[in-house]
Each structure stands twice: as C-alpha cells, then as structure tokens.
Amino acid sequence: MPASLIARDLTVTRGAFDVLAHVELTLSPGHRVGVIGPNGIGKSTLLQALGGRLTDTTTSVGGSVTRVPASATVGYLPQEADRRADETVDAFLARRTGVDRAQSALDAATTA
Image 1 (cartoon, rainbow, N blue to C red):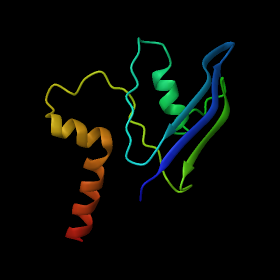
Image 2 (image 1 turned 135 degrees about the vertical axis):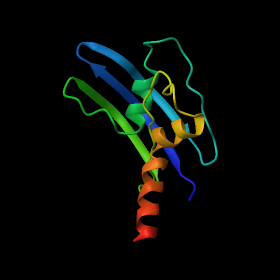
Image 3 (image 1 turned 45 degrees about the vertical axis):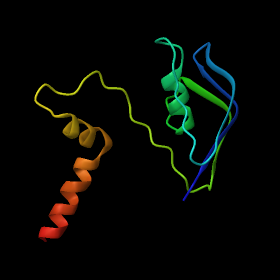
Image 4 (image 1 turned 180 degrees about the horizontal axis):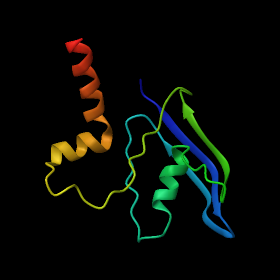
C-alpha cells in the first residue's frame, strides 16, 4: 500500500545543541529523497527521527512525524563502515537488511 511521511517543525536537541531545527518534509507515495551533506551535519539524526528511533535520554525530539496510513513503517539501516572481508555484496545486503534471518526461518519452517 502506498504511504506518505510528513514531518512538521521537527526539532532534535542533544544536550544543549540543536541538531535539527524546525525541519519540514513531505514524502508522497512513490517519491524518493537523497540526504547529502558533510559528516556531523545531522543526516543520520534526521533519518532516525523520521523512523522514531531516537530514544536515548539525552535526546529531545519536538514537532511531529506522521505516517499515512498510520500502519506504515519507516525502515532505518544504520551505517556500517564496510562489508566483512569474506562477504559478498549479496551476503552483506542480506545480513544488513535481515533477509538472511528471514530466509533461515523460512528454511527451518519448510524443513519442519
């Protein structure tokens, strides 16, 4: 089902520092956005805030993030420097996205 993501007045404060201030964003069904900027500018913080993943006690989140429909989810894939030396690109993506665990569970259920 197509989904929309709407952020209004999104502000993230860590300690005494505003990492994001008054961000407005609307992502309509089928649209994609790239987030580009120098290290430390708040790209990961923005994505974590949109996904509802900022839960530590030193972080304050203000504003709103709305998903339409409300049952829509936002995926977040944390940064990892590189794939393992003995890992193919396919294996790396499967591990990082959870596909490998899902495939293992499916294989076990099929065998059972």
